[in-house]
Image 1 (tube, rainbow over the protein chains, first blue to last red):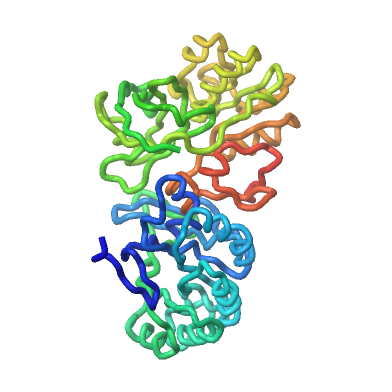
Image 2 (image 1 turned 135 degrees about the vertical axis):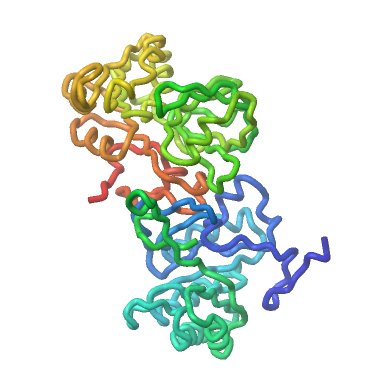
Length: 216
Length: 245
């Protein structure tokens, strides 16, 4: 089993298997099924500075390639995660956890990052930049190298912990975005956030999530 | 919650669209009417959630309406087929506050979790009234099964081709209802809440992802924030609910 050890940005993992953000909540639900310490780690549900209710139902749609989802970042907000979820997680998970954050501006990203980075349990910050940048007409931060770099710098400035930028695949040149993040101080990139998709019934209306476009 | 392999013991049609399935295996985690199970189907990524219609120590039953490819496949699986099932999912109905004459209202396959509930309430010496609504006579099922419990249902069809013409909400005006329990489409549930001042519990049927609270795929608004239908529900009290416009 020692052959599975890996080092991720300076933190040793027993193995390289991490459950991705959004698939694993804040760990408690799966902890009821098996010992989640078997994992190398996991990235918890995308957490925003403020609580978000998420999108109306339906939020998911099965398709031949997998599952479309448009959950809409439902989460209780960073303060509630620190107050409620992390203490519960500490009872069942004894390894560093990856804190996934999302926000609407570089300042908000920094706010969420700074609060979570101060938590001992948090090993890495994983930064979801597939969020609309309202200053740029809603285009995602991850679609523009300058915007991606700005977010990276903002998070970098508030923590010495590893900063991993989670990139969007819905771009023309993902390598350019990755390089911009690296130059701005990221310790790594996480590939990839969801691919845009839609499920349509040829005989009728769209049968996907209520949101229309979703992520595969 | 538990994950166990079950074997299909029965799979037979009740109507053109609805099948009765009974699956044999360890049902210990299924403890309350209102809970649901989630079946893994070959060739599909997502499990399919269904309310438990009834259960005993060695099997549980489901009422499955064919609404898509997964349920269409489930209709074809013969007795003897093994199926992986997550059991004991969700909360259940609360029987203790039912009062003496609770009214149970089911629309279509929404009647499924009400069957075990009716049996349980009757076993507690209560006198449940069961009201079932369907579109048309050809859609009616499970009337005899309720009668075998000694609780013959009040039947409504939208076109009047069987039972009384109209919607199930009309029955609420006729009974001095100590409490209601309802399951069916969201529109019906909302109409039931608006039709009576009696307290009630409602079981929701929504599309689900994981089925046990991890993916946030099934949340709905309540007065105390977003709640996961799979984990915090599927049964909610009437006063908790907020309705989408």
